[in-house]
Amino acid sequence: MFKLSRSAVELSLNCKRCFILQYKHRVSLRSLPFTLNSAVDNLCKNEFDFYRKNKKPHPLFLENGGVTDFLIDAVPFQHEDLDKWRNFRQGISFTDEYHGFTFYGAIDDVWIKKNGDLIVSDVKSTSKKEFNWAKTWNEYDYPKAYKRQLEMYQWLFRKNGFSVSNKAYLVYYNGLKDEPMFDKTLKFESFLVELDCNDNWVEEAIIHAKKLIDTGHMPKGSYKCDTCQYLKKRWNINNNQKSDLFYKN
Image (cartoon, rainbow, N blue to C red; front, side, top):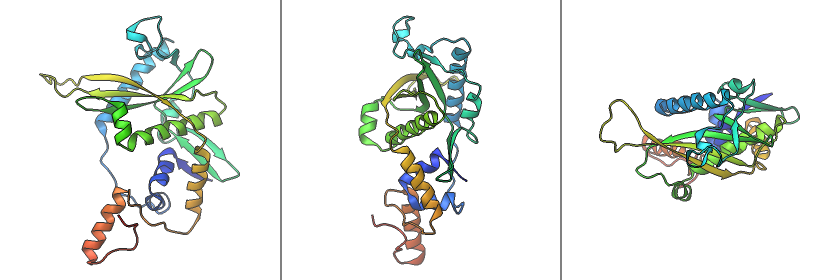
């Protein structure tokens, strides 16, 4: 039974060669950890846990901080497996015996509506002079990856028997960097980004990733992959010739 993470399937969609190198041959370029982002994630989880314990909606769910007008009519979901679902080594998982894989992903948080539907959410942080999600969505690829991330989580919850809303949310914190004084305090503005999701593609993508692992073929690198382009240019410089291991620019 082959174990595939959410990030592994995402990599298989972006670059088949890097996916095979990392998850079949254990070869990858390591990046530095984003420890400040992780701190924001943990603090946000602690805050949501406070409202979970008290069975109250987070203030972000309320219109203008009111108590009756809901932006999101839900409360943080209480479940005995929440800590497991949040653990990056465990997460929420589903095993497909027929296709021979276990797929899993570690969530940030999940909320529950009055009708019993779950809402999957993920915490993101950045620091921009002006936070403009619509502009970011139109100009960059990574917001689409965030949406795919939430859709994979939705698929997992549905496979575990939960009723899940098609709407998912990014809890976005934008660090303010123009404050007059630092005073060892980072200030943020918060945003809720609502996404209309569809997980119909997820199962096929997992099966495709598993088939890539099973085959002995090594795919060529992707011209959209920064890692492949770096390796291509390095190969060309070191060997004074062009490599045919990668797609052309």
